[in-house]
Image 1 (spheres, rainbow, N blue to C red):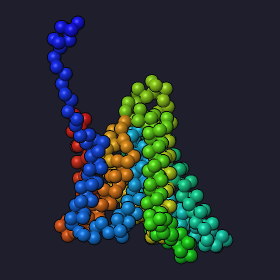
Image 2 (cartoon, rainbow, N blue to C red):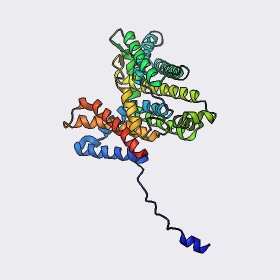
Image 3 (tube, rainbow, N blue to C red):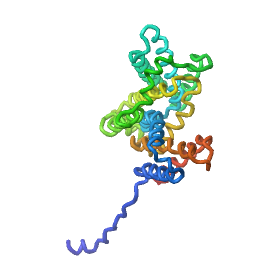
Image 4 (cartoon, helix red, strand yellow):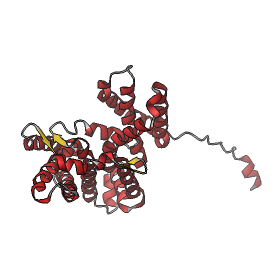
Length: 333
């Protein structure tokens, strides 16, 4: 026995490799912060950091919901239009309620409830048409993107829906106030991200999302109701859009057909940059959070420097999406 062991070839030392798929988004975020500090000394000021984090909250919250959709093998192109439609409905309801209920917090809470209800219904519509209608999610959400955008334009009669001035004064702190020097949008973003992480990593629903996106047939053979899982990811996406809308409306106090333009691009970019596989089956909420902050940092850095025009922000985001997908393929190989 001793001779046989001695005859075996020596064990190879396995070199520890850096896991780009896991830690890449974090390192990219660190490099962006360093770049911003180098470009402009005011980049790390408290006011600028607060502004970047607050602006990233909208896309970040939506991207948390998009993470579940993409992990389960779907995609949602309607989130920007959905946000515009929800904003318009909220403003109309609150303005009409102001006549009988006043302009206090009761009207604001009513608007928030309407936002959640409309978001859930819109997400459920996307989910049911996709799963029960057996239509590709790209086609379904492309269609609803046009529907929601058209509806808000119709409600605004081609113009802009403006929130009652008194209600705007009551609602304003939801975006502009802070708790312990942390703006409310950032706090809500943190809470949504933490809950999303728990749902993905610590619950059966999260495991089923990963299994469904990894291999739909195997998931079905494992007694997973794939249609049910995918439908609820879209419902969750609708809820996240409604939460983002709740903190967005007091920022401008208006909604129009131009509200939420390209939000779907930014949300998908945040998810992909964060390491979630575009074909599903793998993803991390904290990576999505890093991706959302990175997108806001890129826009902020462009505003602080004249090297590249800020009007090229969308082009840079598109390039980042393609680069992130190429890197994912390289990691898999």
